[in-house]
Amino acid sequence: MADPLDTENGSQASSDERLRDVSFLSRQLNKPELGAISGAVLVFVFFGLTAGGTGMFAPDGILNWSTVSAQLGLIAIGACLLMIAGEFDLSIGSMIGFAGIMIAVPTVYWDWPVWLSIIFAFAGAMSIGFINGYIVVRTGLPSFIVSLAFLFILRGLTIGLSQFFTNRTIIGGVRDIAEEQNDWMAPLFGGKAFQGFFQWLGDNGWIETFADGTPLVSGIPAVILWFLGLVIVCQWMLLKTRFGNWIFASGGDAVAARNVGVPASRVKIMLFMFTAFCATVYAACQVIEFGSAAADRGLLKEFEAIIAAVIGGTLLTGGYGSVVGACFGALIFGVVQMGIFFLGIDSSWFRVFLGGMLLIAVIFNNFIRKKVTEAR
Image 1 (cartoon, rainbow, N blue to C red):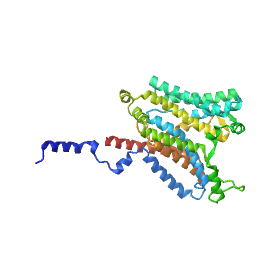
Image 2 (cartoon, one colour):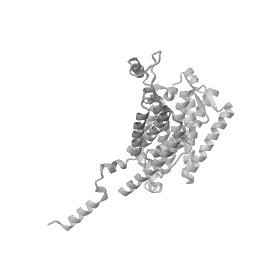
Image 3 (cartoon, one colour):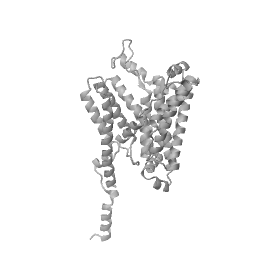
Image 4 (cartoon, one colour):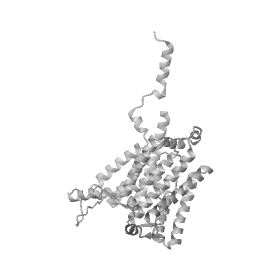
């Protein structure tokens, strides 16, 4: 005869929610990036059927939408991590223009070497990111309002300072100066990798070439490598390190996190600095690649970065999200934006798509949040 105590303990154990079997479907639904991956598959299928013969999936077409996706992905990574920590940074787009001017003005008008101008831009941008985050954590003001103020401050400073020092809002010649100086840092942001490999592909007829034998795709742009590198590092950091746990804890419940020793304020300030870092990488890649900086660069990019993060499964309330998901959100943007171009559709429809995707993503994420809450 079984001991009633054992029977009772067994019943309690079987009812313990920590020991419940979770179905494969439930485990997949709990992954933040599920919606973005599904959306990316659908987008590729759609444009594969409708734009397959337009050159969109030829090597140069792939490079086009990959570059667009990587550019947005750079700032989406920063926005995603900050949103997981429960904060927003609406100044990312303005920071892109400001950082570009900080690179171009010293290089062209003050005769600084390009590498020093780039370091100056990173230092200046991350200092502003620190101020942004410090104000948020010290005053308790919503980061939406504080960063919105910096959005206007930085955009105004970008236009005002560029006109004050140069009497213009577009500054060119940076790339030419970098080539003249044989600058060692410029290729890190404006160079191309694996050029020999792509030349070999062209020589052997694997990809199209120009009349002089130069391959149509001469290499992988630095912005794509920066994007892939940050994806790997940030996803590993978020899921495998103590700092990643701190990010989730800070966004889930900052007060409870502080009570168990999580330096939530320091985490948030560092993430504001990281968003500024990502914006500066974006700016440096554009300035070196195109050879110029413009005061209106990055306009509205802050919203696209946030939308990419939301499509990727990051909750607006914080505490839940995925870097990989944000990157798939950026990939969807790049593919759709270039797909519309290849199909010859009016580009204004792209904004309609962004709004629709945001609405669908928020509804889907709300559904997932409820499922996760019920599972707990």
